[in-house]
Image (cartoon, rainbow, N blue to C red; front, side, top):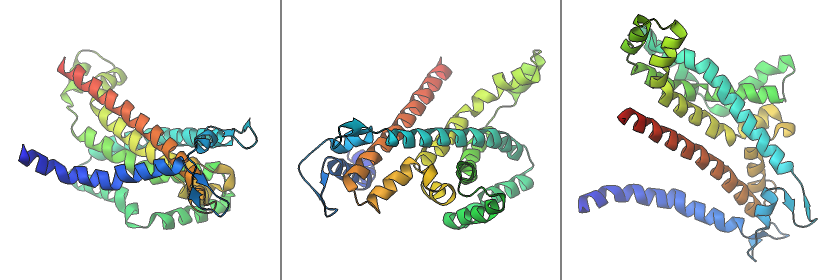
Length: 272
């Protein structure tokens, strides 16, 4: 028991120091008030949380600007994830089906962009899209996010494809199933964990992205990440920024909870 606690203690202390304590401080900030001098103080209030959901306590009216920004963030992240799936899923199969030397080269080409600073790569996209008069625009933001997160989608799917038992596909074909049905019955379920993991690794950071939307999209395509960054930076409204951060964190946790339940259900079906 002592050995178990000794092994567990470093991880627990790390999570407490760098996750739980900062989250608690941020929660406390979200219940405070910003003063006229951009300082933070009492009394405790829920006004920041009301503003998060669109209610302006000062004018006693609903202002849905935040909800519009949140909706824009959700659909843009979802659309980016969808395109990453359309492009990344067959790409992962293509890489996995190559010989060892070619496969290593393709994986190297996939991760080479990580060797360059992300900000420099975004500025490169500004130069690429500027001749087409696409900067700033939602389209430029969308292309930049797909470029940024495509490798995060491909790698988990590739790891699943490498473990595929192709005998199930051959068995389905021997039983007379057409190619599409044989793939859906014999291969797709084996790659589903990688597909879900890739979707989460794309959707969650895309929800909080602010660099791409700030440089490629401008003010008209501000996302929830831009709104949070502005509150902690230019506006100096830390309580409101903390409340927005908790909203984003809640959406992320909902996504992780959905993934956990799907993964748990799949393991149960495998056992049965």
